[in-house]
Amino acid sequence: MKNITDVTKPRIDLLSVLLSTIGFGGVVFGFSKAGEGSEGWSSMVVITSIVIGLVALVLFILRQNISDPMLNLSVFKYPMYVIGMLLIMSCMLISLSSTIILPMFLQTGKGLSVLITGLMLLRVVY
Image (cartoon, rainbow, N blue to C red):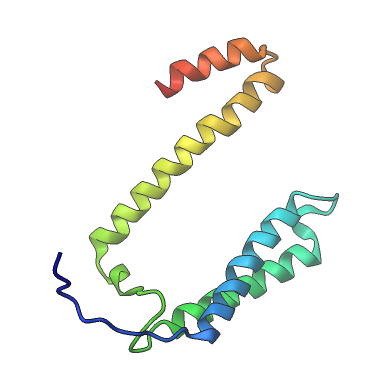
């Protein structure tokens, strides 16, 4: 098969890698720490890590406006792309919630057995 594109050797932007690692890591760490302990969302560790993560993500997004970005975010300029992404995200959230939260509610809240819960989920999913 003939290669029709030009072969390039892009360099790795270390600042972008560092900002994305701190950003995504901080947000994920903050959300995971919120479920632990008795303080929950009011813990200073949770608030600090989420704020640092969000600031790093904003800096990462601003950094990607360079001529050769590590992650091309220019597709978000098109409204139909953003709407499609939001629809896909909402479908995934609905699907995950029906397979994770619904069984917990049926077993602990309604007191149903595991067999009945599984049969009800089989009916919901298919």
